[in-house]
Image (cartoon, rainbow, N blue to C red; front, side, top):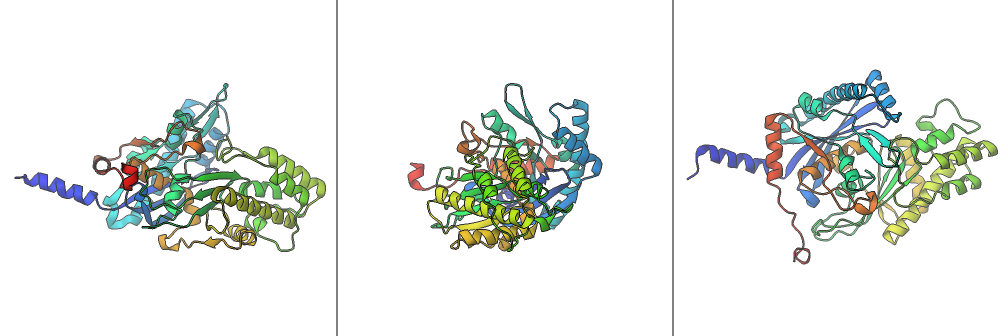
Length: 433
């Protein structure tokens, strides 16, 4: 006969085994101006994870912390003392934003498993060409300030396994946006991120019961950041390079020389550069800037050409990755809303059969994509699910990403019990034999 305290422990384990769980995802903008938090409600585990609800929250970082982070990210070597102080200062401000996001959970706070951080970090290149990465958020300070266990340093394990440390989001995007309907999933989907560089991800359908990594394809092209810099070179450019500079203009014409310069960017699925530090398309930008100035192109012509080039490359990407057009398209990512609408309009001209999915059912906000992705990567760490895709990152084999820093004893106990209750995912009989 069990003792009463054992029965209480069993009840606790049963409650912690409930299908619905919460993780706070944190993403710091590449320019260190703000921190995005996403309180993500997930149902299921492993490849059967489903995102049910997302509550976003954004907070600004102080000018002092922003300048300190930008300075450290822009130099090849840094002072250890300055780095330690900046990490602590940034962690304190991130903790304030996380606590504000935690307040959104109200009475469900006990279902919070932890906070998962997508940190831009500092990308360094050694003399021999080896790439390394250092975090900018002090996980121990963040755990102490919030009481939650922290999952961070996502690129480190991929780098240690021979990868380039990115892209880490494709499998998380697959869990978020792919068609995984039961019993039969049919729609292949294309996710588009327009927040910085333009990123495409082909997400094949699957019910999640197979024991294989989905055949995800991924490509990086010049995006909103590239376009804003290029627009400054136009003959009628203004000092305002905000959202209005990226809207679609029907009066614009396609500039053939500029289009040729954009289309000659023939990179493989992933460019061997860090994702958000510097401009990976600097050579293309220099070439296009020269053409814009020499031909004295108007901003309307440049915008029209840029949208046309993105849509053509997307149509080609779908043809190569999926083998057919007419795929369901998920238009995701940050950036000005009007530029996303303009991009969608241009895509529809080249892909008239594309069907657009409605993400309102999960309260999805495009500006919180990176924070939501971080939360999903946190779920994958808790469920002990590898997040790396070897043919995209170059790693030798799939690995579980992230470093775990314990929070308060009660929070860490909940997380350990949740991880201890993890079971191998259900799979099809032919995969299990």
